[in-house]
Image 1 (cartoon, rainbow, N blue to C red):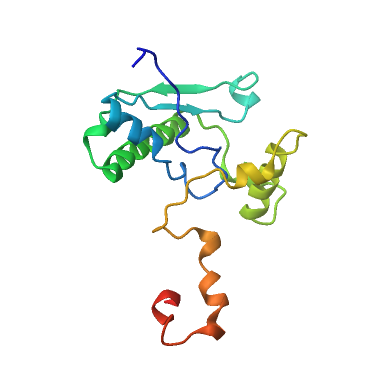
Image 2 (image 1 turned 90 degrees about the vertical axis):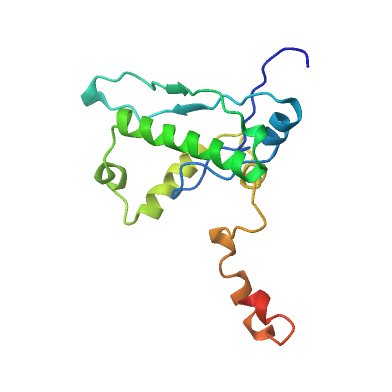
Length: 170
């Protein structure tokens, strides 16, 4: 209403998952677009690791400012899916164009990819003002989508299965 732009980070926290480029988005960006009729401009950053063999000095960041999207005219699910797909596509494009590290280089010195990922996370969060509890719980978790950490929760209670809860456990 005041004629200014705002920046929203729909993932809420930085992505700490190895298997997906973007986390689920919080609803705020959609709701703001739907209530005001404003367009959403996806901005995607990619920060590759420095690689001296390609004469890259320091950390260069690559950014795409994509075309504005009218997600507020769609359903919430459609709008957020379009925004997330747009941003993920640009992120993959930037990775392909500017990525410099091979899988072999990333895993050198580690027994498994999980070990390498855990070491990366530890290095990224190893500073005094990082609040692990807040960051760990900052991402949006849709009720109808099971997160990897929740997969075995119901199976852990298998001894308590009865007629009343068998569907829930399944």
